[in-house]
Length: 243
Image 1 (cartoon, one colour):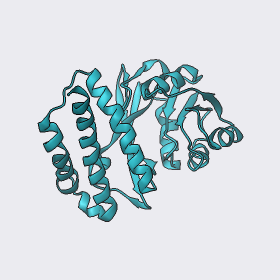
Image 2 (cartoon, rainbow, N blue to C red; image 1 turned 120 degrees about the vertical axis):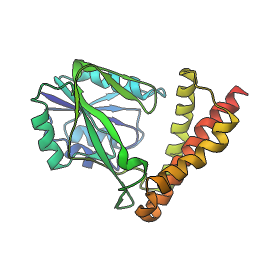
Image 3 (tube, rainbow, N blue to C red; image 1 turned 90 degrees about the horizontal axis):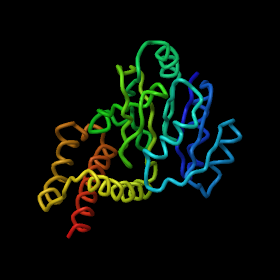
């Protein structure tokens, strides 16, 4: 049995397409962070089990809560702005019959209708499919599923449609950089003037030139800039708080 888990927060614009791409799963669970829109109603109409739980700035805690609610021996985590394609669906159905603890998924980001084939996002590999008992999620943001046992990587990608509005991109950047700064502090990783000044431009150069983000046109430029600003905000917020 396979359970799919989706975390939501005001995802009325995404949830229908997301859950329709998961209809083949044995169980769909939505963990909703007190949405103020129609997210919960839409999810329930599509047959999802919905649990309301405040995020409390802890994505790992939210995912582990969903993990505890899952009935399946296998669990697939999908974000509301992600879609499972038919080829990936078929591959997952075959994969969960093999003696493996978990699988990494490739992800293809679409920014304003264009797939990002270069830069940092083109190298993303996420552990999103695993046996329920294999392990727990760790870290409050940029969370990681720490599991025991052998892992493999699936061939077909997960499609990702983030930040289809620039203001949404900026809000997301501000929120997640604050959580990242808190997580760095908990991990006893200190910020410094060097990190604040030099890490952001280095991040931009890496993504836009070294990883050839410029080949993705304007979306590639904006993505590289946003990754750079995320680095700046994370280290600057941590530095300001400690000084």
